[in-house]
Image 1 (cartoon, rainbow, N blue to C red):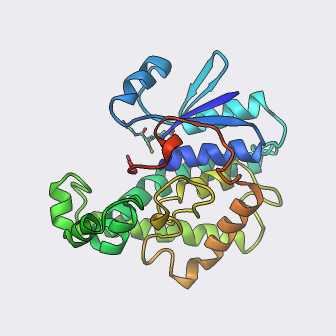
Image 2: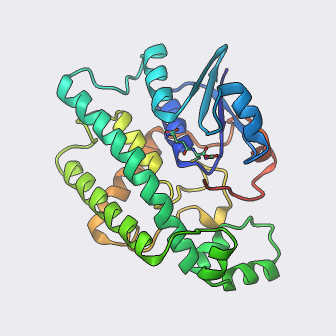
Image 3: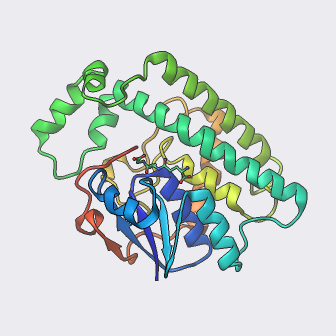
Length: 266
Ligand SMILES: N[C@@H](CCC(=O)N[C@@H](CS)C(=O)NCC(=O)O)C(=O)O
């Protein structure tokens, strides 16, 4: 069976999970422990980042390389259009997802996390004692910054990331006004990359990801509640409902097998 070495909370891993589900390929997830687990990951793949896909003896790292590998090896339910113009658009939108939505989404999410106590406590596992939840909720953003969460992310950096994301979402909404999917009538890699990499803008429902349930469905204020982008969220919800498999029944090895204890975002 295919093995996905992953962080459950990683948006690049979510992109790959969406692709695997769309192609209806059975897989099991191996939860990598941040830090110590990345030593084994390095031994396996020659680098320390997730996602890494293991298919028998073949090991592929990087979500874009994994997408190309899956398309070549499992061509059923194609994710890369064959026409030149559509293929070009698909790859360009995949890059927009990886390079802009993914990186800016992380900054915007950390910014929201620093500013909104409710968002902070929502990240904690359900089993967290109330007294600890209150303490975390009360910590102001600058204290969290000192603790290493969002270091180097001043309000300007967060605003600039959020502004870029607004333009990205606007661009995607304009495309979706013309057609059901980003490159035409069928979903492709571009759709799954944008949907996966927008995970930190709004976390999917708990049916799909094994995260503290309080965080599921929550997102960055200004992006999830602005009516200009409602078409984007309707499109993403539909994509999940139609193609993403609920996580129950998916074999898991590692930290997630016993339920989440914390979420690591990197
Ligand atoms: N370009 C890579 C980016 C992957 C990436 O940034 N992975 C993060 C998790 S979201 C990671 O493994 N971070 C741990 C580290 O850098 O040590 C891809 O598309 O797969």
